[in-house]
Length: 99
Image (cartoon, rainbow, N blue to C red; front, side, top):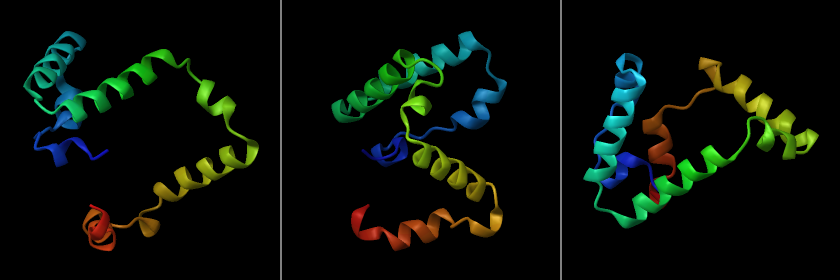
């Protein structure tokens, strides 16, 4: 599954999200979905939304082993350190054959 931009959909939700109220956000989301003509992308988005709305908070975390929880916490810590980050361009170059 690619990201939304790889399907030719130009979004800027992070910036817009900060200024929209709930009703505006829902309306924008409906408009975005109505503009998508790619069945694969629609199914992927549906699956994501379905899993997010049917999972209770903490349920996924509680299903992880202690080792998996520790690895995730370490990954989170590393992601917050600018010295350990890799630019998006470098990642694209490194994994170009799979993109």
